[in-house]
Length: 151
Image 1 (cartoon, rainbow, N blue to C red):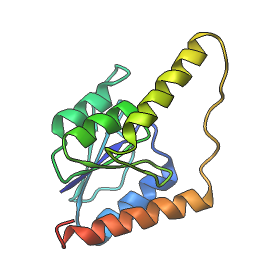
Image 2: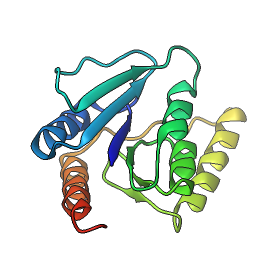
Image 3: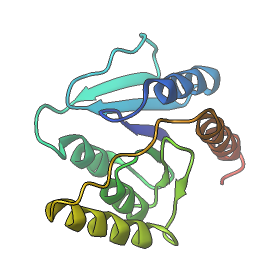
């Protein structure tokens, strides 16, 4: 089981939570980005730099993710592809993407893209709240605790 992180847009506080979890559990953590993020040297933590290209990190994760892995991303198309390969997907705000909710997220994303293309500014997401950080950490802990039980 591997934790795959879409590291280009992953908030630093979430990356720190992931690093602590990897250190505590020994699970493999792989951060994929256009430029390698600065992380402490640990035997179970790797970085993969994919170079330029807007979806290069996403494509690398999709190529490598396997059933039973966990993907951390806010990118809806990446989440959709990872779910189709049997991975679990959690966004940095602590929301789990599933086969039951990902299609609605894709439709909303496409709708917002259409609005932006027509000149309507929808703004970005609000800053990550303390509640969302706790929610992320709690979901991650539950997922990691479930590994030994075949969850």
